[in-house]
Length: 240
Image 1: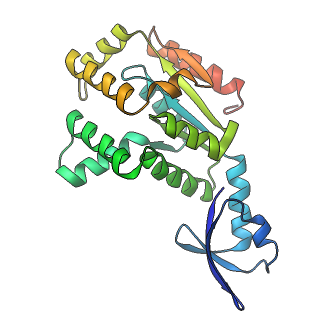
Image 2: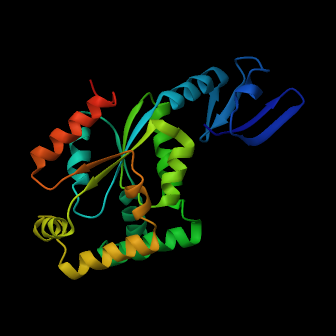
Image 3: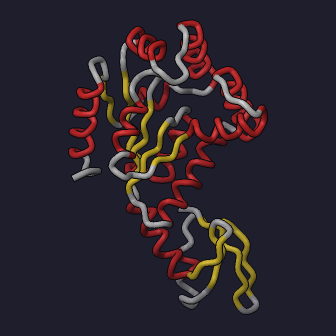
């Protein structure tokens, strides 16, 4: 876990990012106050945060539009697990820029954020949200909507095997039918196709799906999907 430490200790002044701050902190009194995520905390708390980061497990749900990601996320959030939503970052930014949200504007904002801030722009903000949840005591978290190969690598570099990538897959015609029939923000065939192409060609979406740790095929109903999902979560020890 990387920690930015800004502190003054006697004649020593520190303002830098530590990939592993423990070797630095162990040389100082345990009551040393440092700054982490713009909050002043004691070194003892930093060790606690580091330990929690190492223990945290993140279920990262990936898949193409209409695959069934939202059903899996809703299933876990209904059980009390906190959820961070990649798309929510884009929606918030779109509202700030345009005062309204639609598929076309989201596409423009999503691609612009990655062009201007780098391919890991959205993931960086999501990782910060996860770190805040872990610091608050949560060790099992859902990440909904990871898109790109860059984001995949960022999560694996940060959490390793504790970032469990679960791909939800379904035949293309099934996904398109679901999106056309959904009650909120239904999408026409042309809209779905344009979105799919843009996501695959412009934001590397295929990589995380292809290289997921686990894949669930959702070609039946929601009950079947959630039964598969529960079985997987139990098998990897995420749920009891």
